[in-house]
Image: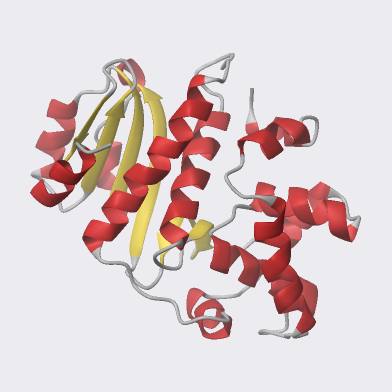
Length: 247
């Protein structure tokens, strides 16, 4: 199953997304009623982007739910939902209808793991046809983003300066990358050569020893969930490691 099958399988994504329809439509209608024009964006585009910023929702989920209301094609709504139209994070935050808070690091780590915990039952129920499927990555990323959005502003699939981040927390200036991998194919050097701050890695046969050695070379934080061991490893601090044992 690949992410490009969204158009053919909307029912599958609606079952897997962590957001209910009302969680997207309610803020969208609220922002659209304000008829905002932000940096040349029309009111509909502005409302969609602000909805995503408030809820942490991804492009797919937003397009699926709004296509049922706006009667527009999913593909066109995906384009409208993109961050690539010249809007910056600071502008989004200024126009949100609540005062966003920057999350404490410990809160952020706990939210990441809580999102993972909610994604795992759905992940276990999938029958993945090949290791290149993008569906597990999307599933984990969206559940983490929703949990983070309860504590701070979480921008999923954020694009900036020709770079794309799975999740960007602008108030903390943290870039989070989600990986769903098989250890035998992991390029471990990639985890220190990129500019990500936190990696959430899910997969089999991934070496925590190698990741911990890499962490000694930089300040990147790693959270690894070994699906074959049902165990979490991380270098985000003793407080978090103690807290995760409660789950």
